[in-house]
Image 1 (tube, rainbow, N blue to C red):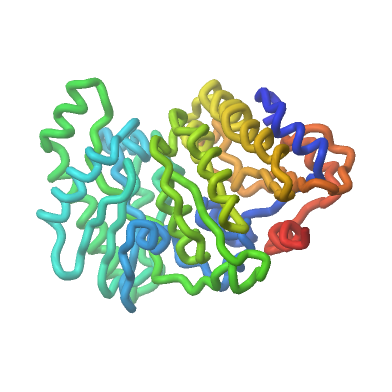
Image 2: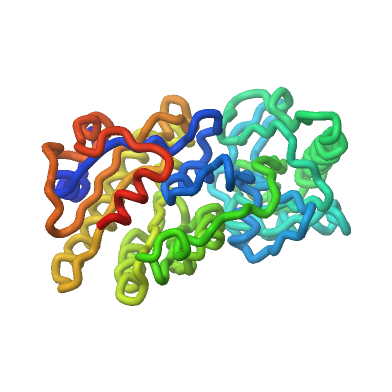
Length: 379
């Protein structure tokens, strides 16, 4: 963020107050489900159930008691190596074909595959035990995958781990010769030739934001990512779909900005999420990551701020990443993230730009838990 061209980020920083936020509590993996629900003030020791149940909520799958919901990536493996967590650029329509194929051949009364978005899908196992050690596939690009496969954390979970491991190997056999994958290989693309279940849990117990914060009578969430939609669902936020929102560098920034502005005319709170920079970090692509940050600033934050300046009703704005995804590591880390809060009339601090270093001098200092959202809701 120091290096990218971000005049609108910096404008917010100059006009507002800044600080650092610890979005990953001690003892938790730096996943997006932890970071984003922490930003919204949820205590992970109370609500954390993994990524799967949030994906389920996003795509309208109602979980019953004992249903183990798992995020189910379609990944690319080459021999013993997990080449990447996303099969390169996999379109949702392609993923749908493969997930339905897996459901036909592997699904039954206990096992059900559901189509999500792009490479991100859902696996629901009735009567599954969530006490599993699951490595997110984006943590191990270029590494042998077998040492990171599902492991039971207790004796009672061994049957679940064995069943899921068997599903992984069977998926590799089924997907190897699928016509869609043959065509992808012919086109010079990575095949989606394995599933990778992870992030499993049961239906979470999350109190809607409208209950916790009376300031929010109605709220909305905007994101191309199922996980964020799922958090919004349990948080009591209306989901707003934006045409052309992809979760990648080519996402519809302008459409998301307009959707947020339109929503603010009728709701009290909008959670607007952009995934592009995270994906560029997972790819280890520095130039693309810089482009996504610049695009976020120029094409989304800039238009929103310009329009809000014309409004008679004051609007509060907070801007922050959910977690770092360094290109060097190609995975999430748990360092605190910089944030800025601005509203008309706020007493600005001395910070002049929004970035990882400048925020250390911000007047909010280092916040954690629900301190950030509580400060925002004081306004």
